[in-house]
Image (cartoon, rainbow, N blue to C red):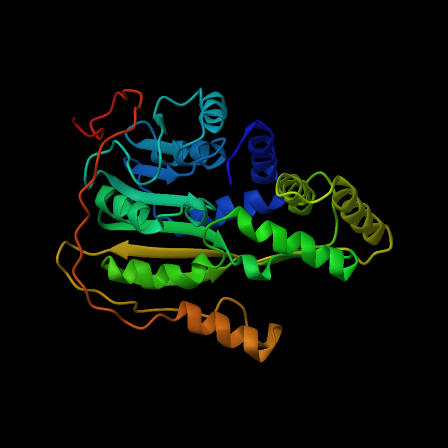
Length: 319
């Protein structure tokens, strides 16, 4: 999904909602931040997490926000204008101008699932992250993302159309294995799933609904059908039968030293089996409990093609 100005605004509103706040809190609680850390946020968007990270690392630390959208970078620059320890890179995730082993932690919230060549992006993150550092990612199990309250046939059409919005529908299923093959250890998953029954100004359902509608229109669905779907959701809310479910998953992992084989040592089902039917429980458990895989990997050869602004930091990669 390309973040044009309208979608970028919706993304920032989502980040400011209750769901965005809880996700940032989950990331901050997972990281063990020291006052002089160097931290990179991949897909930083409007910079909501950056300002919290900047406060945590202090004047001796530094935070890098990476995003391919010029609009998002501009918004992040405004939001973090009071922090001298924040640098912004208008860059793709597979080619970042930071030195090898230059960051103590790397975070990302709903970015990697939109990257087609995710393996290249993960290689790049691994190159930049120090041994023993922390990788913390939040992605959504999109097969279990759904609005409730509209007529079933129309509702299914809307959701089927929206499936094309990202490259990896079920990234939390794939990520543990990918990280294990890159030499990460202590790979863990934590469910951040939630259910929403209102569409108020602080509700992620409100802004997600607008995003889904925007995308459906761009995919060729008629304006009449999309507006009818939204009207049905509104009526369902009035009747007390509206619902919205989303299943974000926080994955944390730690890279080992070069040429040290590691395996997935810990995995947890996302959602208690009592809360799901057996087939879904088995699917999620199987997807997240990756078998140990022993393999040495090295970052691929990389071509430097993109243009970036110069940043006053020792961590910037020398050309």
